[in-house]
Every structure is written in C-alpha cells, then in structure tokens.
Length: 340
Image (cartoon, rainbow, N blue to C red; front, side, top):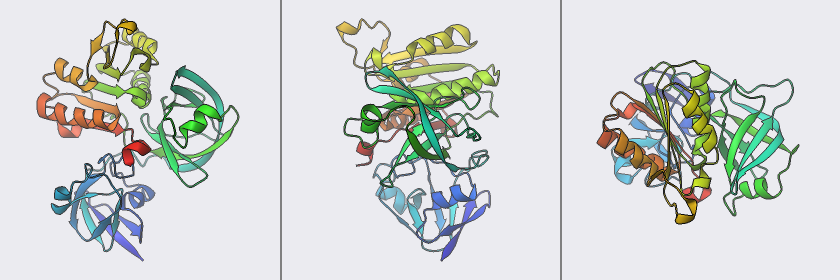
C-alpha cells in the first residue's frame, strides 16, 4: 500500500510507501523538503499537516511539543502517513540536484588536530566522484545497521579527498572505533550527499557564519565555496569553543581574515582559565553575534554545531536582531546522547 503526498504551496506530489516516513519518501523522489538530523531532534523538517493522518515515531519533545502537534504541525522525518496527506512546507531548490548514492570509501589519512578531534580524509574508488553541495553531509553505514552522520569539511572542488572533522565522544559506537582501531586503508561505506544546509548562491546578502566545536566543518566548506565563486559577499565567522584548543584550525581562520576581502573572524571562548592566557572574546558564541549585530534584517545566517547553540541563535537572532526567519540556515550536530 502507498499514499500520495501533496506539498503546498508548490503543488509537488510524491508517493510514500506504507511504513515510510514522509521525509524519506521526499528524498527518494528528489523533492527538497528541508531537513537536518533525520531523527526527530533538530526540528528542521517541521511543517504543517494540512489534511490526512500521520503517526509520529520517536522524537524529542522540544522538536515537536504536544501543543504544536495539536495545532497541526508535523515532523516529517518521523511522520508515517495512514492516508493521502497534504502538507505545507517551504521547499529547498537545488537539493535534489545530485543523486544520493551508497559508496565504499578507503581511509586515506587520519590527522589528529586536537586531543579529541581528528580530520579523516576519504578516498573514493578511482572511477567515482561524489557530487555534493558545500555544507552537506554523509552517513556512514555501520555493520549493525546504525548510521553516523558527518559533514564534509571541504567544498566539492577543493581536494582530491573528502575530509571530515570527527570529535571523540567517549563510549561512542563509532568515534571509539575512529580513535582506537580505525587506520589508514580501512574500508567504510557511506550514503550521501544528504542535508539541506548549503550556501544559497542566489543571494548577495552579507553572511554571518556561526560554528561551535566541529560544527566548523561544514562552515569551512561554505567559506571555500564562497572563495571559489569569487564572491564579494561580506562574511563574518564566529567560532566558539570551551577552551582555545577547541578551535583546532584557528590559524586557518586567521589566514582567511588576512587574505579574503570583506572577511572577519571572531573566535569566542566560553571557559578559558588563567593557564590559557586568552585575551579574545569570551562567553557564549551566539551572544557575541547579538552584541555585534543589532540589525540582521539584511543578512543571512549559517549556523552549525551543538543543538543548544543552534536553537539559542535562531531564537535570539530572530527575536532580538530582526533576522528574517527564512534567512536562518542551520545544521545541529545531534549525538546519541542528544537523542536519548
């Protein structure tokens, strides 16, 4: 059995199989519904259920509070239809441009750039190339059927290899392997490209880039894409960490600030101590943006990192800094701990 999904206001239609989520069916059909985590944590895929019946699978209360569900809102990543449905969602153009593929990859290099962060370089088969948009991610397909998502840290044109920034989560199913047993030349499988976090190239608005921790990875790819486009858009990068060593590519960001026209770099540390000898900005990274930009009404914001950072930024930039809601683009890095 299958059901028809109609998207308003575009009128696009696609088929959703019995037991399949609306989002997975949309991805399969090349329909660009916005999404991030795909597991009910980040609320990027939230929209309105105009008609029809769905059942929501496991999800976080904050992503879809009961009151919002009663008002007809739905998380399409965990909504399974029981009838034909009509939904209301802002479609993302360009996201279905490249096919989603399952591919083998070989570990070409593992570089430890901080005590708890490695940069992994992936080599694809000789005849293969992964087409993607800067900012998108891949999902590793693990043997037990589980998946782990990581953003590509380089723009598509940039390197021979695909690079990922991976932080160690002690006890983590995948990151324990990465830090303890994974080695060069090992073979992994992934699926991608995924996600609707990418540079909107049809705009010339100034850009605020906000990253926490390894949320810097897709932000790095966006910056490289802007450089590649020879764009003159102003960019201000705010990168936050608890301690200075968390800004594991600080020197690269300083180089960008020296060499890229209209580029500003603002590092922000939340828990510096006397031993760090930190003389830069302190506090929450999103608050630094609020302090610097009273008016974001003519800007775009690209935010990536821990869910609490992304959620706080979205709330405060819109409420306090006049940012149009539709100009906030985000990718929240949800871990298994976040989903628990």
